[in-house]
Structure formats: C-alpha cells, structure tokens
Length: 277
Image (cartoon, rainbow, N blue to C red; front, side, top):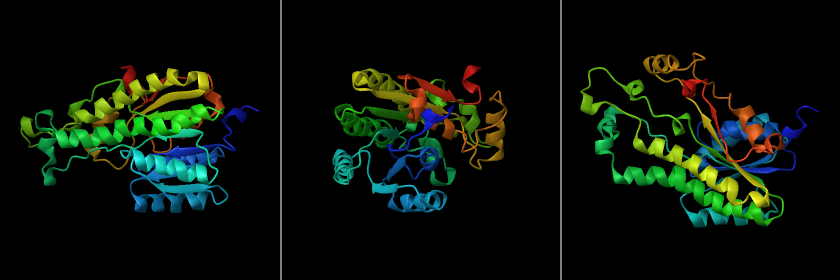
C-alpha cells in the first residue's frame, strides 16, 4: 500500500513543549499515524488542556502526560525511568520545546529585544530551553534508542530562520524611534541554527545503531497576528500566505516514520518558498 510506511502502530513518541502552539499538532499527526504519544511540558495546566482536546479526537489512543523541565537533567531521567517502569520505550523524540519571545511595548520589552540591550539572563533562559534542552533530551532518550537494538528517530523542530536572517522590517511599529524598534531577538536565530547543527551531529553519531536525526524548519504560522505584520510577511512568501497551523502534520508523519527511513541529517524547510528567494 502507498502509505503503509507511514504507519506508526506500536511506536511511542515523546514530544517536548507539547503544550505549545505546535506541540499539539505534532501529537495529533503521530496519533493519526497510530503512535502512542507522551506529551511533556513544564506546564501541567497546559498539558491537561492539550490532553482534553486530543482525547476527544483519539479516544482509543494512548496519550501519556508527563510534567518535565527540559533544562533539568534529573527531570528528564526521571521521566525516562517512569516510562521504562511502565514498559514504555521511546522510539521517536520530537525536540519541540522553545521560548518564543513576544514583544509587548506596554511591558517595556521593545527596547530589551534589541541586541544592544538584550540581557544575559534572557540569553541563558532561552538557549537553555530551546537548545540545551534538545541536547539533554537527545542524550537521555537517544542513548536508550541506540542501546535497545531497535533504533529510533529524533526530530528537532527548528525554523526557516535557521537558513535565513530575520527581516526586522516585519516587526517595525510606527511612531517609535529607531533605537526603540522591536526586533526578533538574537537568541531565536542562534537556537534554530544550533538545532540544525545538533541534527547534523546526531545524524552520524548513532547512525550505526539505526538512530536517525532530521530537522523540520517551519515558516510562519498564522495565529491571529496583527494585520500589518501578516501583510508584510505574506508579501515575502511566494505562495502568498502564512501556513495554517495543521499544514506541518504530514511532514512530521513522514519524518518520524519508515517513509523517510533513508533520510538522515537533513533540515526540511517548509516555508511556502520564502527561503528560496
């Protein structure tokens, strides 16, 4: 059958940052393909909300919730021990956890988003979650994949800004001086490019153990952003629109299944053609 290799029956996927914008979409994609999913996030309330939504759609599927801080090695090891104690082996790891900073001029964050004023504390917090967290989770769960004789898949969720620079004109606001204009913070590009570097490294590290690693780099997702931002961004995208939130599901299914079993060490950019310009 044409789609037989997309089948994930009998596989277990662990998703970090599962309470975030794309976390639930990744979970839905894998549940549709037949996988058991382990939803992890630092926010227990967020996990419960996502679980309520998914449980209505997949009443016959196994959804496991685990509160986990991806920056805390003991937290990660504790979740792995809990799962192994329940006879659950993680076959697929999706490193999705990230902090996507939002600019709010009413809270004085406009100035602090700029490189000149970007604090070391914010650098450390965001890098720890978005990049160090992916390293730590790959270290724990990837090592088990490599040692259990079955192999597995690691998918790092990056961004189209891993291959291109932010266009800071997208974030401009009228009536604000140049030195107060909001920008996409430096951490975002550094983390997303770093995830691609981590992908390249991991793709060869455990290749002999049949552990594959790829990255998915989505373009901008429409999420009721201000009209001026949407119009500016869509003018830069050859397809003329931002992505719908569900348009990455099939790519996740492909990258996490045997449909892509010879794909390794690649950064799949799905951005409507923006990075081709």
